[in-house]
Image (cartoon, rainbow, N blue to C red; front, side, top):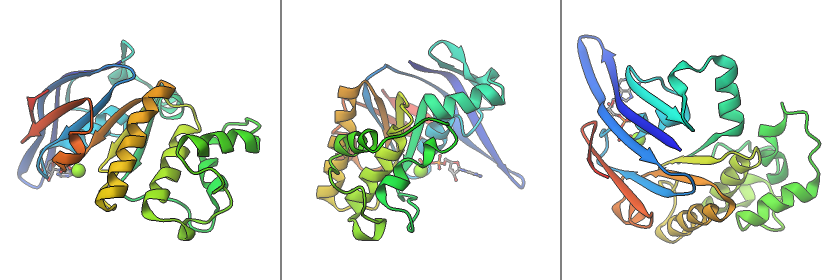
Length: 219
Ligand SMILES: Nc1ncnc2c1ncn2[C@@H]1O[C@H](COP(=O)(O)OP(=O)(O)O)[C@@H](O)[C@H]1O
Ligand SMILES: [Mg+2]
């Protein structure tokens, strides 16, 4: 479980201090599907990046499975990125000269595991891309590219998927299908948190947390 307690994060730009997050406390239960929503600049990305371990908070406590992430050393952080939490973004960040198989096995390159094709096919099935292993990104639609990005996150066996505006580059129908796919990841024991400024997308989640100027106003 993810537990954030009184998280504060400031950005200092010149003489100005931006309070991006001000005493934010939330719990995310295992195997749940949560949306974080709010206007642009409300602190959504900052909050997600803290959960991902990319950004350190200035104050507060981040507990992951009762372990204090604030105190993780670099080795523990590396394990955390590899095995626990994965991220997807609005842009898909696929490598254009690699096919789908090669893109999704990238995270495993540093883990000296033997990866057979049937394992990769299983990952592609999970995201509804059976038979697309040999396609290159430029042969796929936006929705299909996002599916590849999700499969790439899942190959390492992470337990939590954090998605920052994952539907921002997609039309309404593809957006809705991607959110359905993310919701279905719960069937594989995955916990999902998406950030979106789109209320319609947020309403597809089982729980909606609303941020306003760095404060949680509804959870
Ligand atoms: N790297 C940064 N440096 C300075 N200010 C930042 C930085 N990142 C975010 N901010 C500011 O923090 C606030 C929250 O930003 P962000 O978390 O990106 O919000 P959201 O994702 O909801 O749009 C905004 O006022 C933004 O301008
Ligand atoms: Mg953002």
